[in-house]
Image (cartoon, rainbow, N blue to C red; front, side):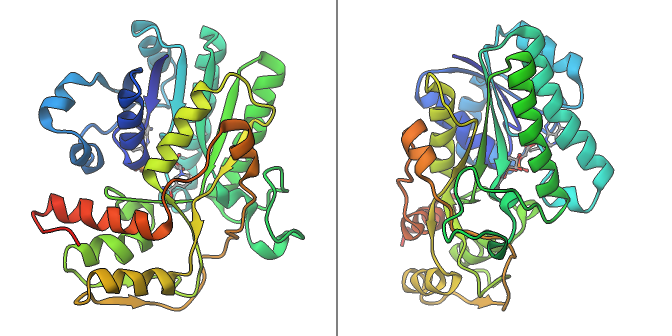
Length: 314
Ligand SMILES: NC(=O)c1ccc[n+]([C@@H]2O[C@H](COP(=O)([O-])OP(=O)(O)OC[C@H]3O[C@@H](n4cnc5c(N)ncnc54)[C@H](O)[C@@H]3O)[C@@H](O)[C@H]2O)c1
């Protein structure tokens, strides 16, 4: 595969870069910001100098087409987008998240690329009470509840239309809450507050302390992305990518056993969306199952952060 990875210097993008390079694929990064700390944490300056990284914007269709032609790309992994900012600036979210993703589909249509794998979100399913089933099925009804999830929902329908009308093979991956070293404040802070701050000896103040999120370790998200690119055919065109459900309180108690001196304050409340997902479609069609339990992922995150800071592992 010759892959263009948008959002390559961001949190999930950096781990996808590592996963694809490790599997021996040619991959070119595309991002409008070159120096996010996420990518700098995962690669040494010498390694980074070897990776083709192109500064470009997904709002620029001509730029996307040009880079695909220059590098003879056959597959696009599309991660670029606004997260929390999508609900603070609706117009910018329309340009980056909607037009940016349609540009990726357009580039794939015009250049007849073999596949696009792109980041949707579990938030499209909205609150658990909107669903009759205890475990929300892969083809459950969307109930978007904010601008971010409304846009991801629209894009899933747009992706289907591009496949049906223009034959653009595309697979949406609805990652659950992705955590790991490199997740920054712009993503909504609670995984960082629960794991990253305590790992560095800083007090963590964690929102939604009554919630039981579906914790998806970032290396599992990257592996699911590789599987979606390499699997020959899938009947489903969107997959919910799950990790492990664990109450915030239970994960906090575990982290306190690793870091007994840590100060972690759980603020009351729920994030608002459901977390119980039936992950069997991803298992059956992509061969994906999470490797990391929430505790294993939390420990790995803490130790990766501590290593960066020159602290001993726990
Ligand atoms: N982090 C999560 O828990 C989570 C969960 C579900 C879905 N997602 C989705 O996964 C994708 C990646 O998320 P992330 O957590 O890595 O976010 P991130 O903010 O770390 O990465 C996004 C990247 O997109 C780049 N970008 C933004 N606007 C751009 C533009 N106009 N042109 C080119 N690049 C641009 C940013 O510079 C950044 O490097 C997003 O589409 C997000 O909606 C994330």
